[in-house]
Length: 497
Image (cartoon, rainbow, N blue to C red; front, side, top):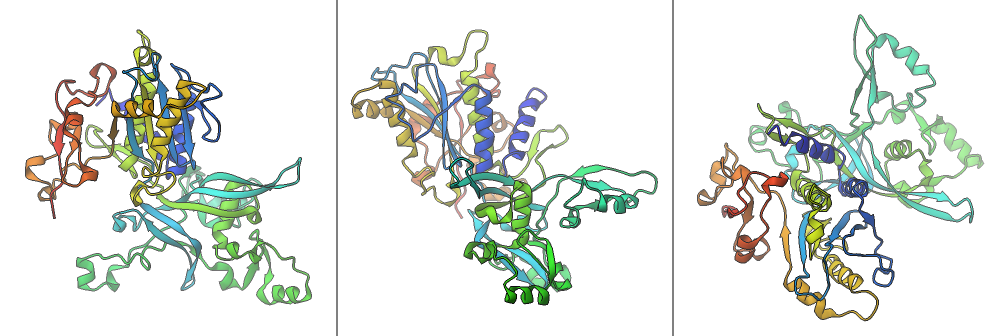
């Protein structure tokens, strides 16, 4: 465990930096760039520009939520009998709650957000969690040279740390110029009562919560079987309708402009300038959410024209267990596979005392991390799209050089190739051991150090016997675990219910 602590802590950093697919890909991009991988653009011509060369390492993204990274062996020769692809496939998405196209929702004096379930999640685990939002926001700007309106795709993650101060310092902070947003975001300031010293600490700032119904309002049957109505029970609370209670109306930037009667009177006189609230999309969004996004992105609310946002648990991942042998965290399915696939590719391309594995490699090593696995993979950036065949064809053609493509070279290369679909395996839960097929137990003292290969009658879950026997073995000397490289992987399957 001590030897793997560094790798485990690095994975925790990766996990905490990646609350949803856009951030996952950004984190992977930054790591690959730091390791000398060259970015490619799918819109460019690779075959006629000499973009790919033997010994090179590259990556590109699709929709910024799927990523393909690969290395070209130094001895690659397309058309040679040894030319092939060795592929690891994983996915960047995890089950979560995502904002609906119309996020605005209010009930009983509380401002909520409209969300929907993405993928097959254990939705009861989202209750009573400190939640926030992350994802991609489309922001407009005016180009300084042409004067044309441009659309920027920007990532956002609302989890900024907020100061915790002593109660006696509150009045000074409330008026201090270093806290210009105090009036708008006063609820984020947590008061730490200390009669002796002024304490300043930093905490993660959640903005959402899905509270469980109190026990006193639940029947005996409801307490015994917790059933979730996805449309009604999973809508998170953002804040209180304070402005409505005070009869105050704010403008598009959240600045109070007067009472409702005063504003309506000015509007009739034509003295109130119409703003983005006249836009149908903005009208369907919760203004308090738009203010938060504008604050995080340092832009005006009127410049936000669309977003794709997901909820996530702000509690960071951590090591646990008496010997720190476990990692607790969200999105382990399937960011653990994304991380190990990326690390394996980087290690494959990294020079050691005797050079790198690429020096004698006659193949293309490729990692593909897809979006939308949790909802069927049938999207332009999912595994069901042409993204994989596009990668094989374009890489092969680019390595062949200028001239007409030879489809037979691609087909023979595919026939010699192998793909590992890497996902998380379910260990045996000690409190629910009966849920696992007795003859295919996944968790034991042995299996903790061995690869698991999944079998099943359903074709999507089926591993071909030759692949299970002839697949790549972990290399002990490079730190891939303690399994004997000639020892076959353990086989497992779920129990039928």
